[in-house]
Length: 300
Length: 222
Ligand code: SF4
Image 1: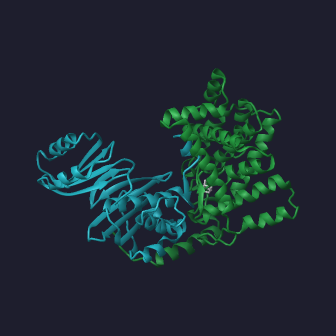
Image 2: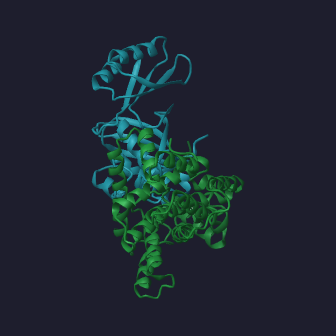
Image 3: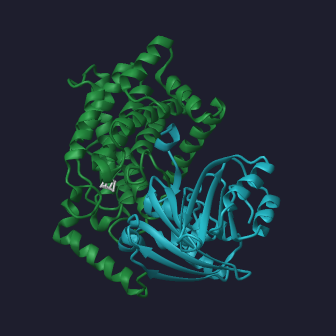
């Protein structure tokens, strides 16, 4: 079943004197009856799929609504020009987040992490770390286990579905996972890992899910950028010794509370927020006309 | 939830429920038909209808009918591939009572003329639930080998099926029974731990009172 509290994960690591990634790995193998080596192979395949997806980006592709496409290329050229205010590391990371999320919107192959809508955050952060830190692939795989462990706790205490918890549950969760991964890569303590995740999640609490026309395009693509940048800043805070005043598990519980209080219009129904702006409604009407146009009537 | 439910699956975007789940519905329907599809009438319900085109639900369902999995990069061009394969596809809309918003009804005709109607729903995270087979209620996930037996509602039928399966040393994980009215048509849905051999399925289909045996195996093949 995985861990249902970060505290429990930390306690297990301490008792058994093992790194966090190892307790997550072992727990998952026991639960899913998977050979430990097969699990590692599978994680490697996930990371490879992320890399392939990153490399497969095609700037010329446009999404179904016509609203998404090409921004990854724009950002790449801007970063290349040296003008990026955030510097090359964060610039490359933003470029990758855009590319992956655009890949998803344009029906290319991606790795859901934890969802398809938030698929850009974790690879953007990890691929950039591997390139710029640099980090060995083995360490990245370990960081992925820690990220997954944090994601499992969020899923079990709260939710990782926009329809249930709003975008804080998708981009927020992926950002928390990515922060945990970076702190792990940089050799932070389990405490720092959890607080990094908690600060990333805290800073996105309340984020609503308001996709235009109900499609995973606007605002999803650009939110992957904020998820990645937020993860990096939370990781830096945690590595600097800054801690979340609210304990990490309680932050996750707060995310659930906020999600429960969020009105259904702001949970993936495409009926509130950006989706309910005049421009957002116009896109929806246009698409509805198209999809009803080509089909025949049949009520059964 | 395991580690690979959080990191994974590898899938073609944009939506696990509207795209990956739709591929699975098509795939399970194709496996249930047991032969290549010649003609498919695909009717979309609820959110599949409203945002399906934008999410590629149409192409995803057809990709599944062509036996593709959710990570197949040919999903976006499945309509073209269907045409190449001589599969005729017609899309429509349907309003199904009490159905999950992400639901499709597939009416299929196979190469040899076999017919099958399946109603399937995408329930999130790429997972699905079949809700109806050939107009009769039947609930299963398609994650384990599943046997769907259509029979006349007569005493003893269920016992005979159970006996036959036990003779083949097959373990039943879940069993559901549905009927339209007493003495009318009934459906048994059996989810098993292991694959059900062809021999057992042939025996079943020859049993008295059994009208149709449909099988979903997990192994590749027909
Ligand atoms: S806005 Fe909604 S659909 Fe888009 S990424 Fe956020 S949670 Fe997912």
